[in-house]
Length: 78
Ligand SMILES: [Zn+2]
Ligand SMILES: [Zn+2]
Image (cartoon, rainbow, N blue to C red; front, side, top):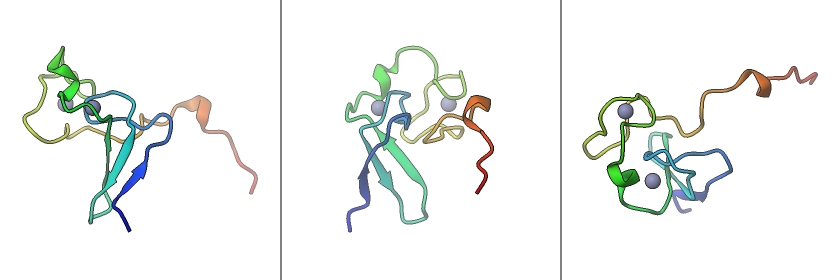
């Protein structure tokens, strides 16, 4: 079984772009990848913490999906 899966809409690369693939690590962490190995072209600050871009590796605040929005959390009677 490949550790890669196709990304779903809304899942993000570590550079902030929409991810195309998601790499599932052995420890269960999921890291999105947009397919463009330029780290977001290092243009501007880190899209996740607003500080400088990081050396190799994702931002400590990186999340595959953006924080849940209120709009998205509807009671699901189930
Ligand atoms: Zn990317
Ligand atoms: Zn950051």
